[in-house]
Image 1: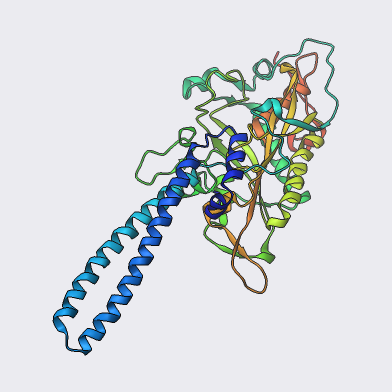
Image 2: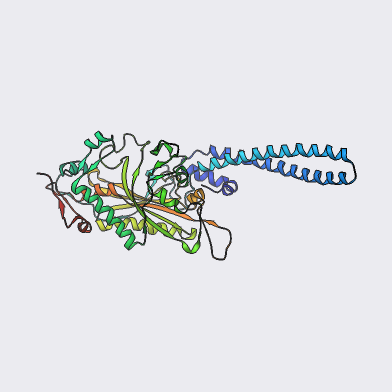
Length: 430
């Protein structure tokens, strides 16, 4: 959430930032109207308080002078002022609540170095890694590969649940588990993250804290009971909220967390997109990276987090590129985002496998996550960062497609073989 005083004092700057994000700025006009109304109410309320104080002093003097009738009349006048003051306070609180609601619906302000553009066409590639594989046979996609290997079953998953679900069997399931364990080992043993296993359901307060609510209500799978829980769309939600409503010591930061979880998304805005295969499912798995840090460290921590996610692809020897997202393509809560895109041979293009975002104090303000520097002083909002390290299903399909062989088998990346009981390949069915 943006700071109310910042929006008030830098309204023109905020309007420009929102326009660059394709966000309608009419909400800011309403914000200005409410702010003017709030200021008028405060001014009138202060004036009434002054009148009440003066009248109370006058009543005391009248009582001392024995002018009881005049004192009673003055008391009735003060009572009227009290009622008017209560009315003004109620209106002020309503105006401030409306302002907070407007702020809750405003996206984060992009960093100054984020490319300005309407959509993904304005994203800027900053680096590539690895050689795109050259095949001397007809390339299959992961669906055909998975079905021929007997490790991927969409038909029965649709029967059991519905579309956009998959069943992974046998060596495919072992490969998925190997990827999870490999990613967690690298992030905990090499990159210094603490592994955590959070709840897979969260409350509405947590969803608000990481800006899924109110904007992305329709993308959630809700538990239909009085508690208002929802299945997590990403481990970012429970893990980032770990210290919500707490004040940490500055010396406790930074904190690094990694978590493997299933994730659940309705994909409400993606009907007709990526309907084939594992690219876009209602249920998928990720290894998530979350950082909480001091404000002055967040830019450097963002670069490190992105490098940590890239390292997984390097070890797997999967070609990828990294792009910085434009203002019109960034997520709601991000001030800067790097997308890591892995090469998908069947599509002859790179596809997103991780989105690494620096949210600044945007989420911390929503969840009231603060820290205090040495020597005391006023608590400050921490900075929060998150990224996939990596999306397991998309890594799985990238392995199948990039490591496919002419005979229909799939070679196992060397770093995964210890997790696969030494197996060097998944062979096609007879």
